[in-house]
Image (cartoon, rainbow, N blue to C red; front, top):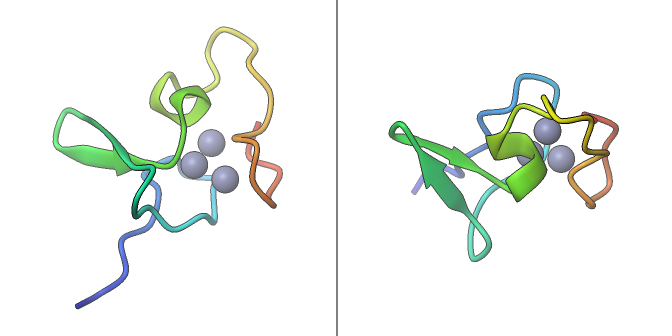
Length: 50
Ligand SMILES: [Zn+2]
Ligand SMILES: [Zn+2]
Ligand SMILES: [Zn+2]
């Protein structure tokens, strides 16, 4: 199976056990789901998408 990536454009994380879904897209964290719109920081993983 292809590994799903977080739908957050700047996020490099893969989504698996922690995936969250919104509008048919998968995100790795709540921060990414919101598009960091509320000023939330990085997704909490090892990237700088925040
Ligand atoms: Zn990330
Ligand atoms: Zn993400
Ligand atoms: Zn993100």
